[in-house]
Image (cartoon, rainbow, N blue to C red):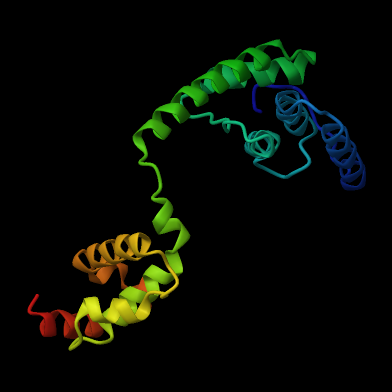
Length: 205
């Protein structure tokens, strides 16, 4: 950091040893938030890498949060000057208060954004998740038999041991996939544009 007179250790062997110490201490911390904050403080201070130490520390801070199934920490919209001042407090005086407050503020903001995004996302379709491979195989089977009747092909392709209600739901889901089929998604089904074109022509689509 250009504003700081702090000069990190430059001996590679010593840096390797101290990085191992930092990682060992981090792994000994049980609380995921404390562990995340520890990495944000000590990685930039040690500066074991030629560059991107602060960015690496922010990524490393998310590892314990992910392991604990917690909302990740994002530094989007964090004031650059505020972060720089917080790091200067560590470099120059060994004080973590500014970074602590910034960490709390950023995490609260991250959780608010995460909740907002989750609310905008549709819940995944359990049937689609459970039978993902089967759906792909059935779509492919129908398209590769352009002169065949889709319902007949599906009756053959769908496992006979499925409950009838589930078979019918799958039929409707696959037919909907076929109606929305276009060149941009063909790779998903292992199909070529020429095969889709032939199927659509045979179906009068």
